Length: 296
Image (tube, rainbow, N blue to C red; front, side):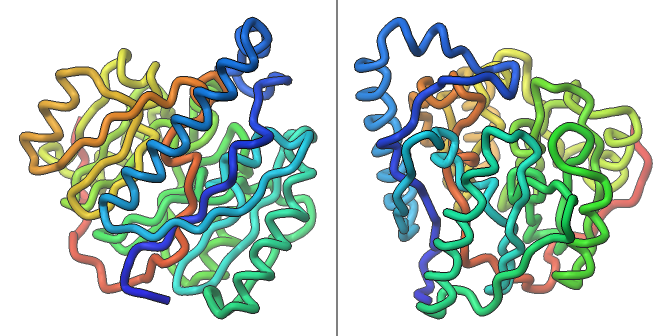
């Protein structure tokens, strides 16, 4: 594997919005002009791919499949760290057909020595990949969402498989059904998050581990655009186009913001992070000590 970040994406050829498994999904809006939205989804997908490559990443593209429109969101395929992959298991029946196709993709990666191990969760344990289990390279642990799509029981299974700490955060709203819709650790140690998406206990856990100066609370406007669902590569953030206020805040902290029109995918409840899965992350020693200080 090269030194470049390696990111998996899925072709949008079969993407549409034809069912409802989260509050964002609007099949009626898609049916109004499917040809235009299909063209727009290709343009948005290409724009994200270009932004990632401009930030120094290599992008590996796999094919989707008819009848599996949400396969365009490979963040849910697996949790990957240190060349080991733990495959996701979907709660909604509409997405379960993706599981064998993503498993085949990871078997191909295994044959090519891109990963060294591919494993599965215990039967009946729902866990929807990196969308609900985000590696915080600075702190050296996972943040794991549960309570909407992924089960609380998945947290110890992830910790055992990777041998890493996993901080569980209960999600409070079906609208923010995966952790990646409302929480994004940044390379400088900050965390971009949307506080109303979390239960009080989860917020206390975030505040205990992330000091106040490093917490960037997204406004309702940016949460509604799925801006928090962002990809951070060094000092570049690829994200759905943010508000001027959020852009200014991120730029003041030294980030280059690649704001993109990802609106076709927002119709399905996904944006930049959902559309990607990073394959090359490693558990280097933590760079940031958790504050472990309770802060309101």
